[in-house]
Length: 432
Image 1 (tube, rainbow, N blue to C red):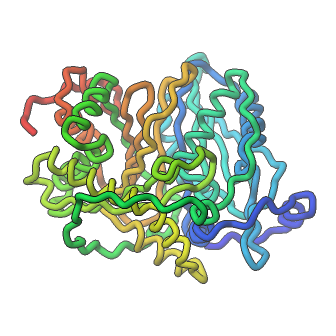
Image 2 (image 1 turned 180 degrees about the vertical axis):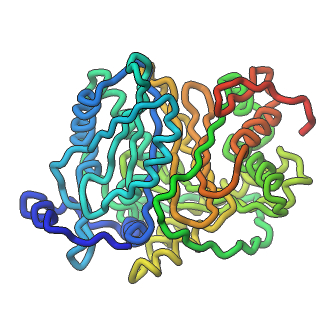
Image 3 (image 1 turned 120 degrees about the vertical axis):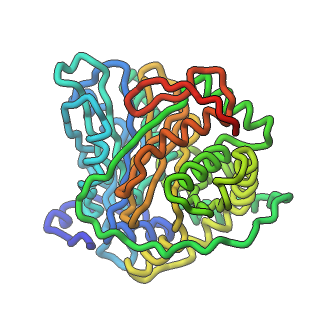
């Protein structure tokens, strides 16, 4: 339900807390949806060395000085919602444990108050002795950034913890204002999509603070590199291969004869936009038919062609979403469900910059309160492609199955993939 305005808002929205800028049209759609259905996501950063809560708090304060939208709340009291400046620090919660997945699942049970500030927080996960590497979970409400922007924030946080001072950035303008200026991208040719598959009607799963399940798997660096090079030879991309392997794995799990995969498209990469902590994305749906009886590389090539066409139309798709102009949260729900209904979402953040202070980066872990949704977050870090699945449904073993199929797809001579328990599993020799 919508967050009520509390007495503290008089302080938050006083002249001492000026308007940073109004929400853009797409940000407004997201905010209306979030007013009834919490949508926040976490990136998981495994550090090589322990970090104290005070060190993290100090670094986050400097990160807020670098990225303006990490120091805002949302004022919904005017005719148009706006980001308001805030002096409140990003909160840090400490938990003890050896498995960050439990902490990440708990982050999905605690909605971020959009009427408060800031719209981000951190969780510090360490073992009981505190002498091993620390895990930092960075959690963001979706009005202020997408996954790639969160990755930018994570890299800058690592730089700050290492003693560097990233320069302060200007307030990023809204997506629509940015897209209305540059010229249209050329439309790719050579792919004619087949008839659209009819999706099942998605429904909202009312938020009840139930923790989702989280499963992980990873390809080792040798397997990841071989998959990338083989994909190029086969006229595919790693993202296309991901879609193909996921379609086959999900078809095997559910028996579905056609798999719909929602794929967010990063406009930074598609349109050459600046890397910033802000929303810069649209989405497309990849439809793969008869995956159980299709060759993986054939599916990967089909997915790659569909994604290439979608990237060419990314600007128009983003502006279309922004033009929906829902009047209330119910209309925003209908718009978002129509745009994202799928059997699986694959949010691939691409290759993250290497940093010696971090052992691994995972994510995003996320739920959007859509019934039976499955969200697969993907990051390639330190040469290793990492998968993390967040779901309230039954998808046990899905990341491991996808990783195994990707390993066979690449035909790697490496050690294979790593399961959620951290045990290397060598690829099977079954044919693709």
